[in-house]
Length: 303
Image 1 (tube, rainbow, N blue to C red):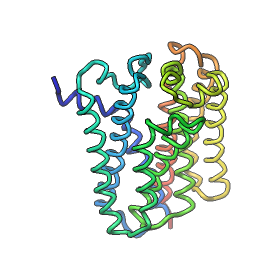
Image 2: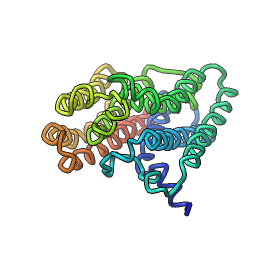
Image 3: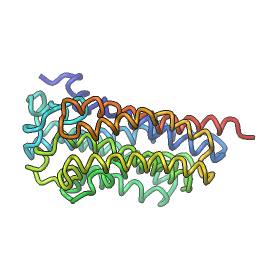
Image 4: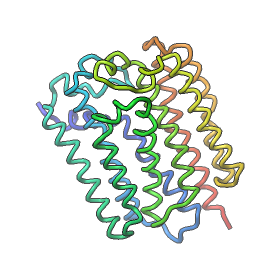
């Protein structure tokens, strides 16, 4: 029987926490750069547009994974393996597909509003975002080695940048750098979450990094991306692209180091890898949140 709880679980709500973090990052940069007022309506619309885009990609991923047979082969963990709704026959595939497409339609309608307000400025972000949602699972995951950066990495980076544009009607170097930092952390979230699903994903023709390079080598890629993301944060502050208080994001570094150690030690042992996956989720959520909080605090103390 369809229930509200079942529909909510199909959206994978535990992953939707990324949306407010990304939207917060975009707004924090806009306020720091001195835009004269906070547009509450645009904030709400940007949040809803981002949220429904995130729901859409989650739900469509579930649908296509079920249709390809991946969800019937994966070893589900708290951080990977899909929602389990379709394999358990709690919802029909057509209903799930319509939920995904309907959610994307909400995002597109909100995008049309911003297109009317800001003109062509916001169009590239909107078109690229919609393309990523539609193409991610059925096509992008089958391209060798681009799943992580071109999918969630780029998608959530665009979420940060798009939120900034909805407040300002423009682009900036600071917003772009913030988007890249957030995107790198999110790419790493997907990368580590792919480790338990290597065999099932390979059977469906996917070509992500753990499949191409092996889990052991992919663990080193994971470590490298983590190091680059933290280094970019430090470099951006050193170059005065971001304010000093953005270094609050470094408070998660001890947790990141623990996640790295867990990935290197247990990359091929899903049971023992789960704690590292959990720490990785905390790093991905807390680092942009703390970095953006620092930016916002500095915005309120300027002048």
